[in-house]
Amino acid sequence: MATGTKAEKNPHHQHGLIADLERTQLKRLEALSIIEATTLVLLVFIAVPLRHLWGWPYGSKLLGPIHGIAFLAYIWTAIQTVAGGGWHQREVVRLLLVAFVPFGGYANIRWLRERARTIAEIKQA
Amino acid sequence: MMVAAIYPYLVAAHVTAVVFLVGGLLAQERIVNAISQSPPEAQTGVLVALQRFERTVTTPALLLTWILGLSLALSAGWLSSGWLIVKLIFVVALSAFHGLGSGRIRRCLRTGASAEKIPGADLGIVVAMLVIAVLALVKPV
Image 1: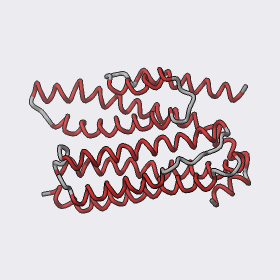
Image 2 (image 1 turned 90 degrees about the vertical axis):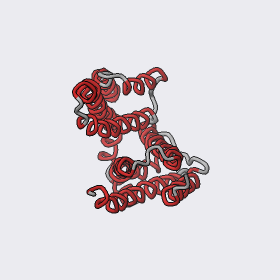
Image 3 (image 1 turned 90 degrees about the horizontal axis):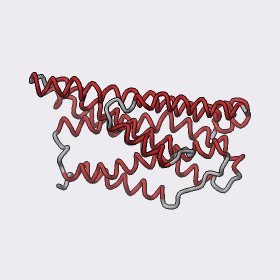
């Protein structure tokens, strides 16, 4: 409550924070998208072949749980992002589907940056 | 041997993270409930503080809860146990609720809409936590 009172006394700080909320959220989703995509690519194209073709299981033993956490963090952040509103159903489906496709997360980068740019332009107008 | 040695510390860290997560979720619902009757402009300061609290406390607690919980389940070989699967349903529901709740706060701040309480949400959090605690301690199946 004390922080809220402080923010009320400082409207410029509060306005700036609200204006940056969506952009920060999109940046967070982009970062998690890259981490999720990278761990999936490393797992599918390096660790799994090493395990099955050369009998070296340690790569997948290490990367499996790391990718699992990265996947959960990405899906959760995607849900948190779309819960903020302003997303079409098709965009929500796309956000969730790319997590299952190797390299899919990289397709998010340009899209999310364009969306952040559009938000910034709307705010400036 | 090494897993057995660190097991109680992993449990302690997991329980601590859960306390912060559920406490944060409950606090968020109670505060939104308390301000829901106020006009939107009067809610903004509290919502900004709630959003910051969510980002610095509840969400890191959620991430730690998952990392430590999955580490415990993997190390003890519980992933195929019935009690853990049922527990995971409640954990996923609480996690999704937190994601939707924090998105709701962001939406209210962005659009200037009034934050409204979700009927029964706080009771749902308490019941879910009770079920999770019983399943984790009793491990019935």
